[in-house]
Image (cartoon, rainbow, N blue to C red; front, top):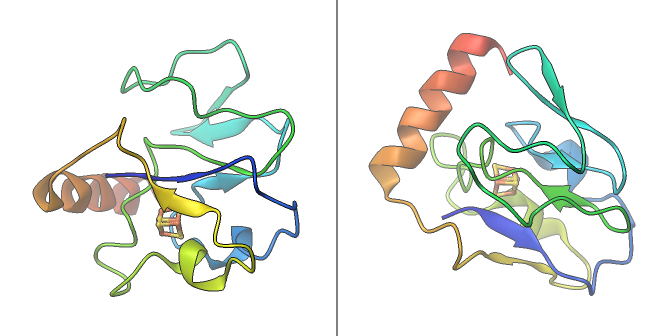
Amino acid sequence: MAIYITEECINCGACEPECPNTAIYEGGVEWELAGKSYGADDGAPSDATGFYSDEFFYIVPDKCTECKGFHDEPQCAAVCPVDCCLPDEKHVETEEVLLKRKDYLDELGR
Ligand code: SF4
């Protein structure tokens, strides 16, 4: 399951450099995957929706592995001072899927 950032986010930016998958972006900033940029109106390759934010840092489900393969726990949640990085019930995934995503991102070089 991907992690998502709630509206409680204070935009401190502590999470972004901790993400091993470059899955976290500042609000309003386009995200990138496999050499392509995606904005507010672009669909994600996985068809995930509702994660982009103009106002707060956001996490791209297509790039989040819940830190599987890197750490024992989501690093964004571990450093967030207001505990606004939570499991996203809309994007529930198995460990197998998350590790396959890590392999895919490894191949891309992130
Ligand atoms: Fe990045 Fe890990 Fe947070 Fe997912 S759980 S956004 S991979 S730091």
